[in-house]
Image (tube, rainbow over all chains, first blue to last red; front, side):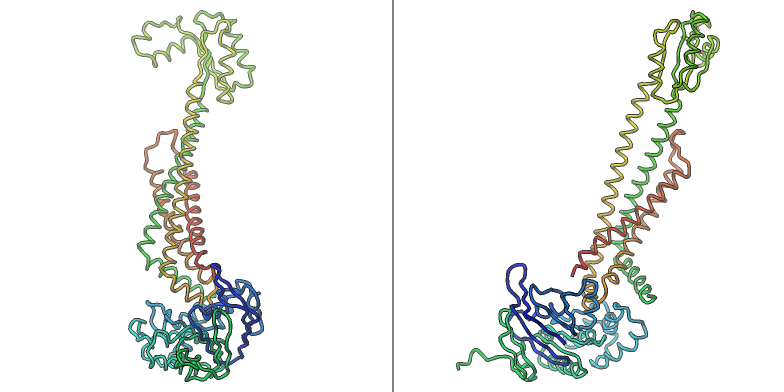
Length: 232
Length: 284
């Protein structure tokens, strides 16, 4: 599904963000990206979205080298990738329904599709009764569920989540994780960058740890990491 | 396609309405600058036309001595008729010139004049206005010729003044056009900036660049269109009501041409300004 081959990326200011990263992600996998701030997690996600291009190496998505993609094809690539962020990124002057519908409208889906898909996805995230509310009338957890609904309404093959629980309390984090798992069970590949140790430890999914741009660990049923406070 | 047209239409008018103060500012800016541009063009045409009329009216007059012999008069007449640079000549007899002097000169001056003391004259129109000078130099000091007068100096000065006027008008028009473009660019940039969140979400979920771009370009286009419409009204009003001297008055086709220029320029700077403004925001 996703394949990184010796990918390196250095930003203009000279700091290396990724160093010779090679990684395979299978279709339908659920994978955690962990590591300290600045370890390259976000760069990894930005490369997948082709918001950045690698300096060296290639990235294959569904068998295609996305570095070779002409610029005008990039939007079509992104239609297969859903995105969730720590800060939700909802449009404040649009209702819950409109926020989700927006994602379909701007890729030219007909109104009939919008009217059948949006209620369905709002039911999935449990916000049917809030569809007319504006984002600021919702709790953080609810807002993030709207963001997940928007990311998933187009049924993408891949869902990227950049610290989706970073602004949420444990209960809300829990409901977001349940939602991501549910989406993952439909066959969608989920890549989630996180700092949330408890979550990762409990989920027991594949964990890839980055440190200063390099993969230092890739565990199939991993935990967040060895607690540095504990003497060995 | 139909879905998109409806979307683009809705977006454009929502934008125009939501940022209505900016819309009004942009439209007024375009209107004011294009009104000035249009007026400048109109005045330039007036000046050019008046200049052409003055030049057509250029005459060179060969005054004969009051006591010139008829052979001397005939000699001048033949020479004038054979000159290709002289289009047309009329001979005014002493009596005719005396009658004209009566109408032109103050009473105390023409009362001392008698028909026999009045010079007869050839009133000639040169083919090209500036040939008046050649005629002047040819006949001055010929036997029987009293004086050759041509409004040479005045023509030169007038032409010079008109040329400077035209340059000033055009320079003014160019500067105003530039400022109108920059203002539209700025307005659209602000419109995009106020909606950058939406634009970033659109890019995130895979909206194509054209999809994002078109409503903003339409917005600039409409602002340019409205601005030039107001400017056309202003230019037409100027043309209709401003009391221009006869020689400056322009016909309807000149007005129509100017208005077409105003309209095209308004629409073009609206679209081009917004295209430039949005380019930076779509750079991924």
